[in-house]
Length: 307
Ligand code: CP
Ligand code: NVA
Image 1 (cartoon, rainbow, N blue to C red):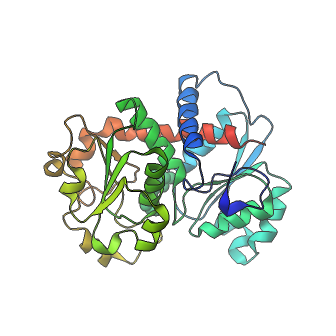
Image 2 (tube, rainbow, N blue to C red; image 1 turned 90 degrees about the vertical axis):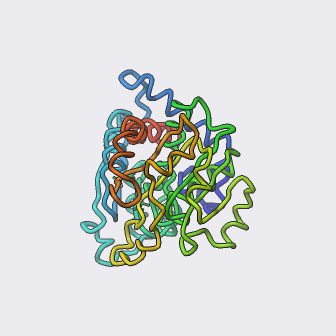
């Protein structure tokens, strides 16, 4: 397994979608589907293991799905609020990680800086899972792909639109997924919230397109996807919301999508901002299936990473 950011780590981690191969990405989605089918009766690959969960940002779905998933896989989840750890008082990651690596079997981390995950993996020498950073949200993408596979049969040949912040953790993880899997991915975002030319050059994916026109992105889309306009950590930047005027997923926008389009939202949703109440409720079955799929997809990740 190749993890270019993590060359010195002699075990697997899930730090980004970028670092996955197309095969591992689709294998993880398929494995999530298998775990879903046999929820009550699957093996317990984490039997006897304890996984730490360090959360430096709020969470409902990610925390819940990892705690339940680890439990259902036979392991114990230890929730560690970053504020309660000595980390919050200045203990360096390299010391915290070396202690944790001697006691835990793996770590789930939600934080700001991607580099912190890399440091935890390098110093802890145990698998690390990215539960959301400012750069990527890989576990959410696995659940979203599983939902698309369940409801559309495949992502192959589909057009997936993303309306909103085009250079956030969600849109970045989606762009890497599109690069690996080859589906058409069209982002509509205000100019100031688009991926940088340097990023697009590194991505090098002609199937990813960027526009300032939500209608252009959503035209003939099989999936219309959105996320909050202000991500966690951007509190105090409410003025930025004005840039998103016209970037709402509403009934009018969806008229240009394919007839059997899906609407996805990773949640939490802010009705009246990135999505209307009507659209969210009309597509609630899909959106909450998507939320449930976090559990199944993450079981696949944990079983894959288990040492
Ligand atoms: N979608 C998602 O990651 O939700 P939480 O922030 O509630 O974990
Ligand atoms: N982009 C959002 C995703 C929340 C699950 C955030 O980082 O807050």
